[in-house]
Image 1 (tube, rainbow, N blue to C red):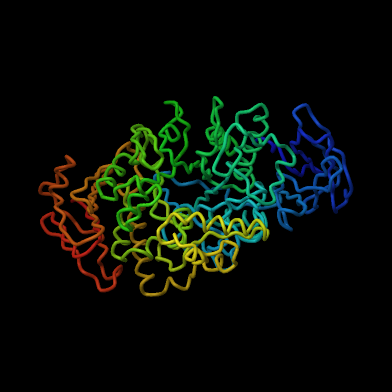
Image 2 (image 1 turned 135 degrees about the vertical axis):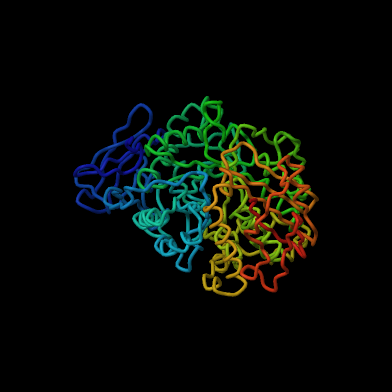
Length: 618
């Protein structure tokens, strides 16, 4: 393993301190307590990095850096901020934790089923420790990986995590660094991989002391939706890139995470010969000595990102392929604003996505007013991460309402079947498996003046929507700063035993069990799927692997019939005289209240209302 480049790193009977700060003339380490308490000078090298080794300093000591005689600031690479992002940093010894995952091996990427969760709202306590208590539930549900929304420390006690400023420090709102290690260690003991969401495209608006150490972290040459871009390709970019790569490697090295989800990579603007995203992927895998999953959130539909390096790709394991979500939402909920304007919302678009991976492969986007995407003809299907809900698609709605709260339950069941039988990698958002009644709203805990601006900006953001065009209706939009907004977003686990929620949970458990039991229903390493749309609201998907053949028929809006023989003919995979065995239907009494049975006879599927069936060809 490569030694860390930044931070306070215990070694032998002391601690090495290292920080990059080319602008200040002098930096002093201020140790607030411990055997080495006092002020210690740091030596500077030609690149503007300052370091020293202090005998007697130890884990638990608190410290800061004084720049040119000013009051001490927290370490930009602090491993823990016990008093918050404005307080002193604390030395942490990662080697003091005893791991039990020596025999842990991540499952195949074809088995990957991701469960995204926000630590603060996943449980009533909102901590790493309480999330650990739910691991047996997640194992039994049938997911194979948990994806933690960002945990890097932020201002205040509640935040989505995308306003992180202490990028190396797990938020003290959730617990200690060892609490996070226990969560990861426990996940591995239950057969679950851990993916961590990380943010490198911007810093939060409060407590970001990194620019005080060096203004060279940012550049005016590029701009992002959050202002100045991180400088990844300028004169001082080598140290900036080292800071980012070191951070990514530290989560793998010090916390044993199995993967990273890189936030908004389209905002990581980099004209270097090797893009920072590719460098991160290569570096974390080299650091771990094992395969580390790297997923990207990126709306550009760039096949290069998820193509193999052998053909010039970046070698990422996956990208959030939002076209799937947007078509589903447009079709079943009627959304037409913003980027939804690019989607007609019919099942022909869904069939294209399941066959290709995404809808836009270079076509003109009216919303973006330019072409979007590149053809993914060399990309295995499992590298497309798809969902019908995630934190963004729920939380960035004005009221934070979930999809299942706005459509009929029978339509939700049909949508769920399609998601969990598609040849891509599925992602669930916490609580969707039981159709949780709680919203997931946007919440912050910033200083009053800054918080007021966030509240006002949030409400202005939705003024373009007809239902909020009147300023008086803005008051209905939850205030991000209000503690109630955060509290309302917490899952209510007692719901899982309620009749409606229990039926939905039973469906998800059944679907996930089928996906893991049958290789033909898992994510595919082929470069194309097999689907057809008999009409605007029906889709038929054929899944096959190692002799197993399954047909999935789903209807989303109204009653109707589906002729599987015709669909198979259109796909060039005719059923002929084969027998079709019913494996699952969404109108089974276990899944549906007052069920209206789905009829299957002579390859004709009759839907009395929206629903889905899974059939096995014998």
